[in-house]
Length: 190
Ligand code: AP5
Ligand code: MG
Image (cartoon, rainbow, N blue to C red):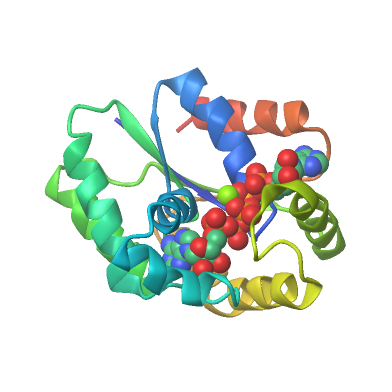
């Protein structure tokens, strides 16, 4: 079983690259951002609560996203493996993921961390904001806050996975195809 944590700051290309990896290796793609946005679209209580955090570029509480991932793992019990996109984002979430996966005896195989310069992140997100309808993509100060939250709360996870010898930095600059190839070559060696 292959369990990949696809990691990187907002706009690094996690969602874009997950689509290639999922097809190439026959994995289930789990994006907490996408799961939360579908709750918002369905106007559920969870969605309304999450929106208050997402609109500001703040993290949704750990227990909410951990609960969502737990139920997705149960629903897809026969999967060949998973790509976790945008999860975990805090040390608490990483510990919870380890616990959930260890219950099945299938730990995280590797954490692939896309590295992209800050100005490129901002340019990509503002460009997408012209059409995405995502409230967190249109305002530079909210984008800056998402990046600051990443640096403060999420980036430390690189050390968490490094300590388990599971941290693989990947150059996330360049064409989508070139980056997909870099990731594929790494995953083949996991
Ligand atoms: P989430 O949906 O996860 O957003 P994010 O991580 O902030 O960033 P994106 O999804 O926007 O970036 P991405 O890396 O997927 O890049 P993409 O491929 O889309 O989270 C949103 C919010 O939900 C959070 O702020 C938080 O509130 C909440 N949340 C989610 N998960 C949570 C968790 N675990 N805990 C707590 N809260 C959570 O690419 C971006 C753009 O760039 C696209 O337009 C794409 O076409 C373009 N692009 C991609 N690759 C390239 C390239 N190589 N060259 C040029 N353009 C490119
Ligand atoms: Mg994404």
